[in-house]
Image (cartoon, rainbow over all chains, first blue to last red; front, side, top):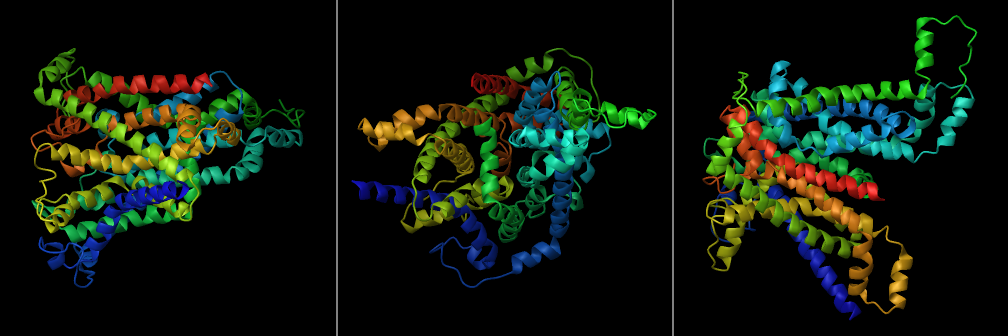
Length: 276
Length: 304
């Protein structure tokens, strides 16, 4: 009975793992397969003859891929920095200071976090046009904080609340101002929370699609998610090897970030659902 | 409130500001300002503007005139809109059902300690981490009409596979599969985290009462983590109802609107067709689902 259950559990884990990982496996092998294996509908789909780096070469020499990589990095870094700066201040304020409306404002941030991008993208496009930000990376850098700030603020609020109040009270007694107490005593202790919020924010902006799709049309200004499917599909022709190579390279930064910080990721992912 | 040091100094303007910022309420509001400013300009204002746009005949680049509810009257008579609304509901209902069921199973299995547990957990989260557009491109390739790896595997055992993204009802089924693939880890991980917080005494008491693993799960685990199940489900309903990426990459709503949903149709009408007023009205149909879900979430969170 006990072993029977264990075998069942292991079997279901294996099935789930194959289902989960197969697309990544297929992405990986397709990026390295020569075209004659890629476009061959006959025989064993898992057999292939030799490895080629031609798809990667094409990506770097015939498309704006490096530029997209740079754009994605600029946009994700800048919007994460802006969001963290705003969210540290707001999170501290909502978690630590007592004033009228703090409770309602805290919930407002939470509700804003739940508003999907697809509900707002049309009027937001009109606003972005009005501010002459259409087609520029600056537009994305200013718009991405709209979904990063609510999330980071909510996460940091929870983190600040977990740091004992006595700590800053002792600082205040010793003659610190409130701002000094916040920056010198509380913030250093909140570094792990800031780090997980930052990783999350970076990943979310790296992955963002619809705003970039609507706001950016110039090939050299694109980010990875909109660049890869645009320049590697020409008319009806899909450059599958190159598409998979681009998808693979575009996934590497977040996959690396994730592999180093798995635990922060998991606790961050569940923070919203569990801690509420 | 801490006493301000050096109150005998002549109060210069900076000094007055410093004193003001040392009081809780002014400092509290001041620290909120940068965040609120960004959200006011790029969330609250566009939202209000969207409500107005939906009541006008605006196109991209030209603000139109107030036309009352004419856009809503127009889209409610539009058969493609009705189809998109139905597709959105089917897509949400079916995928959330599977994501919840598979997520519960995944969490239950991952809760058991076994050797590759850590690796398995990390691997299971990958679909959630990797940029959706990029992983969906891999699915697009796997669904390819000529070189689909699924069909090649089927051909191996002498079965002719369907045209995954071309022939009814496969396109919708394919989209749902990808959405379930991507969304299940979110359920698995948040339910697992909740399960790990269930007090061990509850299980011990159940064992004393003679409950087997299945009954322990049903009568101890599920009731204890019910709030997390509900909140995760509602979050997923919001995200799925508004999903765009998976559908746009795989089918763009086609073939012939078979997989058109609210978000893709709003994009088609509002951006590609430049009728931004009608597009805004279409995306506003997400609003009721959003309101109801948020209402229930807030109610659940406030209850405890």
